[in-house]
Length: 252
Ligand code: NAD
Image (cartoon, rainbow, N blue to C red; front, side, top):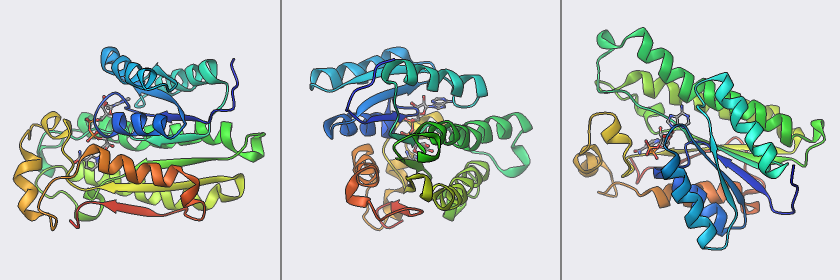
């Protein structure tokens, strides 16, 4: 177990998209980064290599947040690599193929809730055990990645996904109040339409471009624009902000 002065951040699903942008920006801001990935080791290694090349510190950490064993493996690996934890970004998330409620299977729903909801809650629990001043930690910060779907509902596309993000909003509010006296701030970011591979994974590769006219700022956001909001919530600049849910949605 190694312990250094550098604060350590775990980013779930950090190998691409918004998660990768958060990892790279966090490293630039002085965090040592644990880049979690579920299966794409080369993609996580590429993020780690980019951070190392820029003079930062990072390790790739394997584990499926949708399983209890996966969450344990992730945190064991962080303990082994760094011996401390100061921040968590619950970024890993999945959508499903566009489907009406009458087409949603129990298997799909189970996986969606396991990854998006249980994964975030189990990771936060493991992080609180390490960061809370109640457990001998130094305090810390958690940022949950919600979605504008939580308030818009995603009718006709994936109401199950929207509901899972609604759960993240409620969890953010409750957890922020519960662990404020543990020295931990908890906030969320609600991205709108962001140009990442998420849409293709949900069978709608042109979704970001097609929905642009409905966005008041008339364009999709970038992963970096979401990462910038996350970095603010991770930083001491937001020291009096907890329980907040920040829309990064171009006004959508
Ligand atoms: P993405 O698909 O590029 O990234 C998601 C990442 O999570 C991937 O690296 C994926 O491998 C990882 N992941 C998925 N399941 C996992 C699991 N079980 N364990 C560990 N990692 C897992 O999409 P993105 O757009 O970068 O999404 C990041 C977050 O932002 C998600 O929570 C998503 O719901 C949210 N979000 C995205 C948008 C958007 O328009 N792109 C909008 C609102 C919210």
